[in-house]
Length: 238
Image (tube, rainbow, N blue to C red; front, side, top):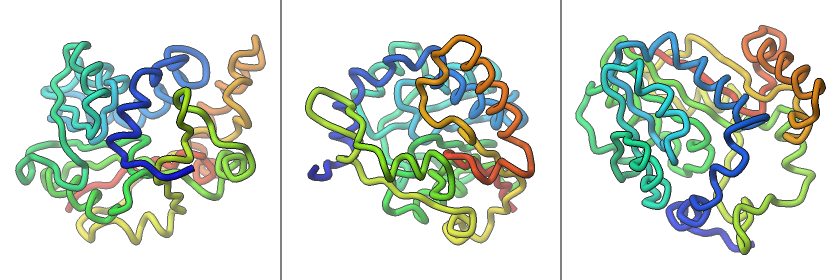
């Protein structure tokens, strides 16, 4: 399938983006991602770079001093605004904010679709104050999810488009370290979706609960966290 510009792709994705995201597998993934933010978001000035429809931002906004979301897709932003969230249109590679405006900048499910990854990470670091934090999620090639993605057919995001139409990168921890600007030091690594083979297992009674418990444990377990399909790094700015 021919690749499409990110804005165009996500505008089409927006209509069905939240389908099935409020329970089961997707709700679990959101909870595990939010857990990485909680130590830094309370009473903080927070930016979500690539906020989509606001699924994560709506959980962070009530505990933050200020919470702003940014996204490239007007279709996604329309739904975030309908939630009453403070959001702006823009690109993660050119953030429309001043140096040190935030205590925490975070991004989930976005950086894997950014070709200019070094610029995006440098921008996130720029808008965070010294001593502040950047939480960034990457797609991990050395994971069960990475293997399955390589083997299975593309997933439909609309009646006419699949996820093969968007640029997607996979980054191991060594490559993530190379992408980070020199003023960011990694202080934590978490793995999200370590043992789940297919999202549908979370819809099966008892089995879903067992996988959810396993995923919650594996996210921060030293032996498993580097195997997450979604690798979440927390970095502190010097």
